[in-house]
Image (cartoon, rainbow over all chains, first blue to last red; front, side, top):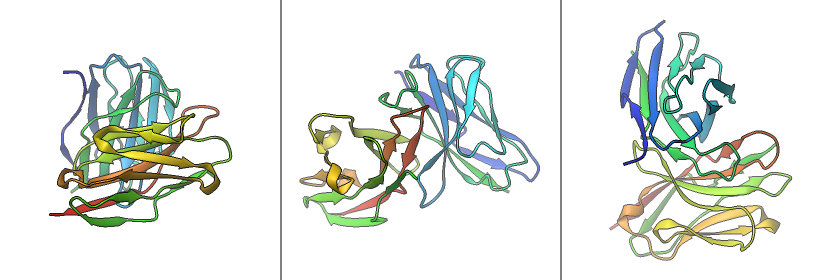
Length: 114
Length: 114
């Protein structure tokens, strides 16, 4: 079955620690995205990538970093510079980045701070 | 500034009753509009989208939405709600100029009474 997988489902971070969230897709999509979701708020874009080895900052990129070394993978690192990382993180992909393209979402990773 | 407003944070309906979820947007150009559904702890699934043409659009799971330019609205409707429709619903607008950009509303959580 084609789809998007995110791991882990739950992730715990200690103070000053960097953590990496995994996102893999087998849909052969060129574009991939990372969103952050907080209670009572809509989704906010962290980073997106239109093609391998290229990515762009979204609205709330500070404290986060990404890489896109393979078409199917777009990992997100939450660095120690992100002072309020507790949130639900969603990865998505689409065939391209024009707005008509449907985005397909993964099941999400919930990040909690110890 | 562009924005999406979902004025109802929570809505409760009885199974079999009709449903309308409100969405208002603020955007100067012609918007591309979407409705997504999110089950607890899951990613988002696209219900329907409007780009142009017929202002009444049909989606999956028996949902429909009507674009009203004069009211800057894109309300989601379903004639008869099923218990499995309990979820959170997000309205989104995609900006039609420049680079990729979606703006999501804050969501409406639907509870269905048996």
